[in-house]
Image (cartoon, rainbow, N blue to C red):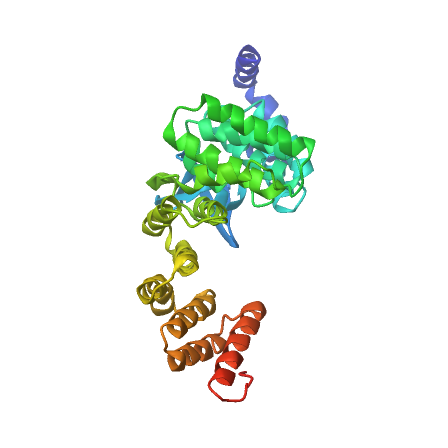
Amino acid sequence: MAKRDTHFSRSIDSTPLRFVSAVPKTVVACIMFAAVPTVSRGDQIIVGRVSHSPVTIVRFEGGRLEYQTESGETKTVWLNDVRRLTVDRSGAFMDFNEAERDLSAGDPEQAIVRYRRTLRLSHSFWPELIAARLVQACALADRIDQAALHFVQVARGEHAGPPLAVRLIPHQLPTQRSAKAIRAIEHIESALKQAAAPEERIALTLFRFALLHAIGDKRSLQAARAAATLDISERLRCHRAFTIQLTAIEQSMIDIVGKEALAALDQAIRDCPKTMLPSFLLLRGESLMRVATTREDYIRAAWPLMRVVAHMPDDPLVPRALLRVALAVEYIGRRDKAVELLEEGLAHVGLDSATRAVLQQSLDRLRLENNGAPTAVD
């Protein structure tokens, strides 16, 4: 090809001037326009509803996509937060861009076909980035076994790794035992046997529990204990990881509230993202209420619940926390305070219908016991 290009350029150079002058000006203009390189439009990254364009994708490292803006500013974003990515390059990237469009448009089956076609032609960090997208696409397409295989690839990746893997644990998991679900669990268990790196084991352990719990497998309780006691390292601390661990701690305390589970709760309260803190505090308070027998026990159980009320007043879990605190103060003889707390819960803007019913029932009971007629609170 290079020789043809050289020969072509020499033939143009040696063309007599009179030949060039004989060519119509419109044709010359078209030839000159075609010879000018097309100005790049740049890459595009869409996060939520915000489009960042034109940008230049620089690298993919630690699960984060690094890109440069027109002004030269360098920014990063977690790949799982990117809704759609458009790469301003030709060749295999045309398929990749179409796959991104299909995935964001809700057509994961077509996206899978195109991602895999791109995968065969990609290099550098792109195979890991595409594998991450395939985790999402396969889960959405009810191919959880294939999603698990790509998850392992991401967790072991040099550019993606466990920090991205935990963020990619699918929310859409099978709810019944099936051949695909069993294969998915087998893929994760096989990878766990081979995994030596602590962070890789954390990601795989969380995904394994999530799968077993979702399908109601009898091994779920044992898996819950393993996931509940994980010390989630700083790079892996995200909402998805702690959502799964919260469920694991809840499951591990179904029969008994043990010291190990309470220690796991304390560790999660210390390390979890701020968005998850109310959930863990509520669980700790409710767990202590279950085993409380003395006045001091109930006071101790109320402390984490009051942290939710005092420090996160707008959180939707506040009414539930107020309900539990009301029960605690009722036990220690402060029925008047319990009534106030229940009324505060009923007035909360984030109150859901189920909690409203329980709060109202408790309030009516207390008022009746205090020789007052039950009155509905709007």
